[in-house]
Amino acid sequence: MAKCEELKELLEIEVIPDIEEVIDALFEQIAEAKKADDATKEEYAQLQELRAAFLELLHDLEAADVSEEECAEIFSELEEMIEVSQEDESV
Image (cartoon, rainbow, N blue to C red; front, top):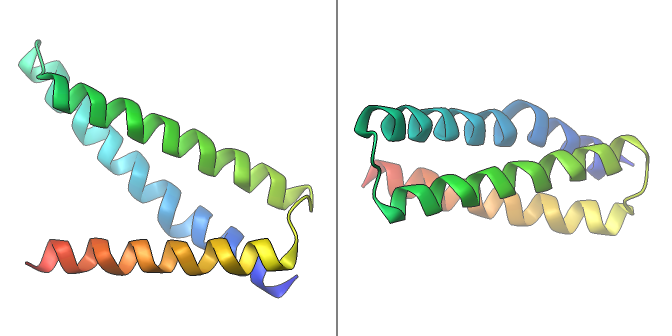
């Protein structure tokens, strides 16, 4: 279950905290604007859903309900997403 442990750590240490940070920033933006545009509201809602999905995945990992193959695949996809995100930030 090595890949599952790596995936769990990635979710707990990097992915979920990063999503929560963006959610908090968007919430502040919405609160300050009092009337946020639809795109901001939609992004906020999507991030809330993504966070919920990652928390559910984390729960499944803790319950050992995810196979090693699934863990490796999800881990790889998350690493790609992080790399793309970091490249976008540096541009």
